[in-house]
Every structure is written in C-alpha cells, then in structure tokens.
Image (cartoon, rainbow, N blue to C red; front, side, top):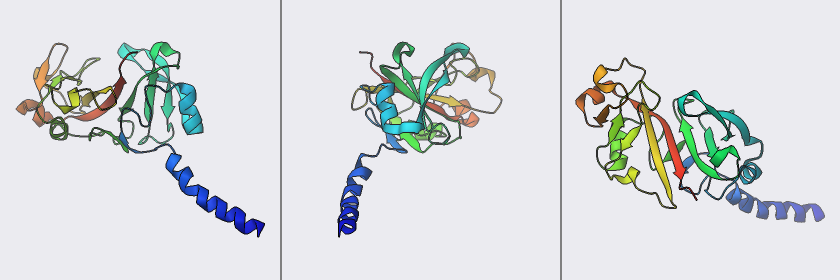
Length: 202
C-alpha cells in the first residue's frame, strides 16, 4: 500500500515539475529564458550543468566572461552577458549561427532567416550596415518597425546579417548603409547570423 501511495504521489507531482521546468527551445521574450532580474547564480540554479561560465566574443576582438546555456548543443546555445563582467546583473543575451540554425526565435526571427523574413517580422524595410568590418551586417535602423520598438517586458532587439559570398564594394565598409529592399543586397542574399536581446540599463 505504501508503494502504491508513493507512486500515485509521484504521478500527481510530475505535471507540476514539468510546468516549472525552464525552457530549452522556442520563443525568447524579455522574461524567458532569461530576465533582467536574473543573476548568474539564479540562472545556474534553474539550468544546473547546462549553464556554464565561458569566455565570449566581444567588440573588436576582445573577450569577456559570460554565461552559456546549453554549451554542448549548438542549436540551443545562448550567450548571456552581464554588466561590468560581475555576473550580477544581466545586460542581454545573444544567439549566434554556431549551428547555422537555432531552436530559439526572437519576435518571430531565428538564425538563418532571410532579409524577406526579417522585413516581414518588422513590417517594413530596414537599414543594414555595410559588410566586411567589426560591426558589418548589423541592422542600424528598423525605421520604426516592430523589431525596432521596445518589446513587451522592456527589452530591445539587435539583428546581424552575414554572407559567405564575395561582397560587392557598394555593400562593404564602415559608413555604408543599405536598405533591406535594395536589389544589390537582395541578390547577395545575406542571412541572420546573430540576434541580441538587450535589457535596459538600470
């Protein structure tokens, strides 16, 4: 009888456990799988061994200490940055094309998305920085489209495009800005290689 009661209790408890399990794929919001109120400690408590401290790529070749979710599953990998490297206040998270695809999405956009897909999610054309330098391929202006507005919960989005093709001079270099519906850019057919979710500074 004791065994039967214990089994029944476990079955009753299992749905609750499933409901509180942290997400491991799907849409990313301003609060899931990481929130602005999180710390490295709180994230590691939720994800256990699937949240590890690593050196992450920063601007202009620099690196910084951050937290990586699912470090062994490249299509689930999320890089988490913290303010001033202290891992006490989350500043944002990034998806990269480590697997050329991702099981996560942000505002309907995922790694590998085309110009047309991002333009559809934004609701209008946007502007992309010239390729071939440290900040090349980033969307510099969403033109007040949906992706450029503050998202529900108070975070913002950054998107970067990349290409493995030879880039025309007209689309290359610092200071170059190209509309997403530009025929030359469309012919190049870049895809999304990085997506950032950024929390407002406190």
